[in-house]
Length: 441
Image (cartoon, rainbow, N blue to C red; front, top):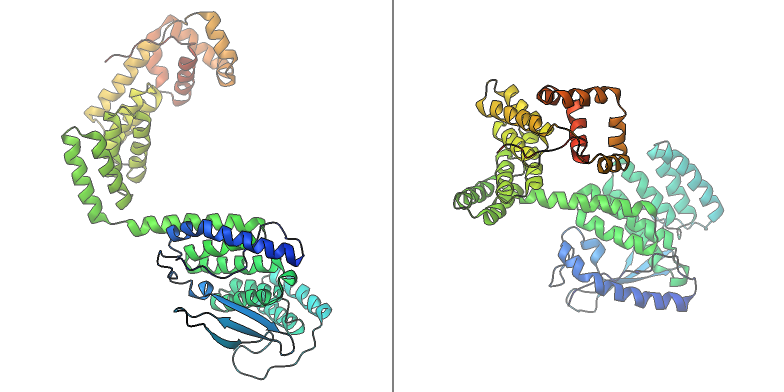
C-alpha cells in the first residue's frame, strides 16, 4: 500500500460553499490522488513501500487537526507510522510567540487586521521586508484565524532569504485552514500556502518536493503563476537529474565501445553507445562529432548536422567537426553553408588540404547548377506562391546577378563567395528559377 498525505485535495474551480457538495468533492479528489500516485512514485516523491521522500517529511505526515476557538489553539491528532493509533498533542496556537513567552488574549478585529495587511503589502512591494513582516505579524495578532496574513509574512521571509521562517509560516497557515469546518475553508489561502511551500522547496533545491506542493496548490485554487512556477521546477529537476548522471569515466567507456561498433559497421548500435556517452559527458565535442558520423553513415544527414553543429559550438577550433559539417551540408545540397564550413577550416588551419578540396567541390557544384530556368510557367507559379522568392526576383541586384549567370555560368563561384547573394541564389535553386543539375561525384 502507498501512504498518501491526508490533505484536502479539491477541484481547481472554486467549490460550492455547501457542506454536501464539498464532502462529495473530497471523495472525488481522493480518487484523483489514487490515479496520480504512480506518477509521484516515478518522480521519487513516494517510494513503492510507502516511505516518505527525504525533505518532505513535514508535508507527508498523516494527521487530522481541529481548531479550539475558546483557547485559540490547534489540537493535532497525528497518526503513528506503525499503526499505533497516533498521539494527541496541542500545537502552537495562532498569535502565540514561537519560542517561549506568554500568550496574549487578543479580541479578533478583522477590520484593523486588514488595514495592517494593506500597509504590509505596500511595504512588501517596496521590498521593505522588515516593515512588511511587522505589519503582517500585527494583522495576524488581530485576526489569528486568517491564514492569509501568515502566507503574506512567509512571502516577506522568502524575500529576505529566510526560508526556514517562511516554511514555518506557510505550514502553520495550512494547519489553520484545514482545522476549520470544510465549508469555512478558504481555497485561495490553501492554494497560496501550497504555492509558498513550492517556492521554498524550489529555492532549497528540492525540486520534487516543490512540484508536489505546486500540484496541490493548483488543485486548491488555480493561480496562473503557479503553473509557470511548477514548469520551472520540472525543468530544474530534469537538469538536476542530468547533472547527477554525468560521469566522464563512464562516458569514455561508452565512447570506446561505440568506436569498436562503428569500425565493425554496426552503426545503429554505435549510435546508442555514443548517445550514452553524450549523456554521461555532454561537453565532449568529439563524442558529438562521432555520433554525427553515425548519422552520416545512416543517411540521417539533418540529424548529423545538428550534432556536428553542437561539436563546433563546444569547440570552435575543432577541424574534424567543421569538416563533418561541411560534408553533410554538401550532402543535402546546401552549398552555401557547406562552403562556409570549409572556409572556416581554412581560417583555423590556413592551407588545409581538406578545406581547399571542400571549397573547390562546392564552387564546382554551384557552377554546374547555374543555368537557364526550366518550364517558365511552372517556375512562375512557384515564385508567386513564395513571398521570399518573389522579393528576391524583384531585387535589382539579384536581377543583374541572374543576367550575368545566364550569359556566363562560370561566374557562379564568384557569387557563391558572397554569403548574402549565395543564400538568395540557394532559394532560387529551391523554387526552380535556377535550373539544377546533378552535382559532380
